[in-house]
Length: 428
Ligand code: PLP
Image (cartoon, rainbow, N blue to C red; front, side, top):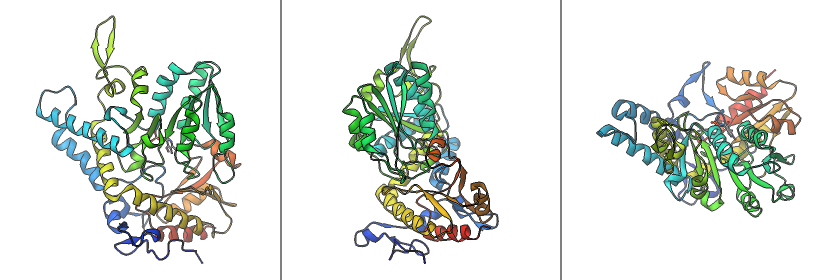
């Protein structure tokens, strides 16, 4: 019997769902109507209704995001900031509105602290190559955790190669939680940068980033938070947590691919040299010298990804309409239900059982290779992921090279988890 940690809530099949803890307040959440907003969620794949459990790789897009893209190209396509005509004015206004939406979404104090980039990966590279190259030198230390995505490892390795700085890795326990006493011991006056994932893309651990940031600051280090797996699952307030940098990718938060965000505190961004150089990021150019533009343009060389930034703004409006607090509560409850349900599958081992965890379920089923398990699920329309999930050191911590991963978002349901479990039980 599957334990129902969500009783008496029904998570599928009626219009409104009341999370157990919130029965008596007004925080209802209409999963049925949310599901109708996502055209692809309602398709059949391999003769079965699609069950999209690959949200850690990318989320599906609501209709309003898709419409924002076509509306831009059909009705006001124009370059921005440099036009002297009506369409350029509209496009510029919408692009800058999107920046303000991101600012509010992250709780940043100023719009110019929001830099549009291609995604989390590009944002981390930008910080490593500008802030890092200016502030890190031989013998300095960069702290990463064992549970980082390759995108939050490889750019720091390059910085280490270029400067002679040393990378140190903060260990985690078997549940997938950072060992804070070890972290405390590893922080020294040589620590320049601490780069931590907010939510692990393999373990689902929600890291105690506010505490970790406070600890790093007490030693004079700055902190970059990789929010790629947090942005559409948890509400973020960069001022409250006091992050120096916070990065995320639009496509993992119901927005399009090719757009992402670097948040940085204004005084830090102002002192950083520009990264890419060209049009848009300059104030004056002659062949002897270039004067750079103010923030945020200083970091947005060339024509930016206008349409996708605007559509990311729509995705943010969409999440705000539901409410990040409701999304978080629902997904945490669904994650708990999924963990309890999966633990009943014979020979299944869950990887990542932190007490503070959301949305990501990694597992292996002996003796089946993860790709066999994923192929079996795919036959029934269930999209999951098998492999190293671009975080090989995390899996190595558990003696693994590969795992299966089911990752959740707001449109997933208890019924889908039941089908996942049933299908896993039928693998031969
Ligand atoms: N960081 C984490 C934790 C991720 O899960 C990912 C992608 O899976 C990234 C960074 C990189 O994101 P992107 O490929 O969108 O740049």
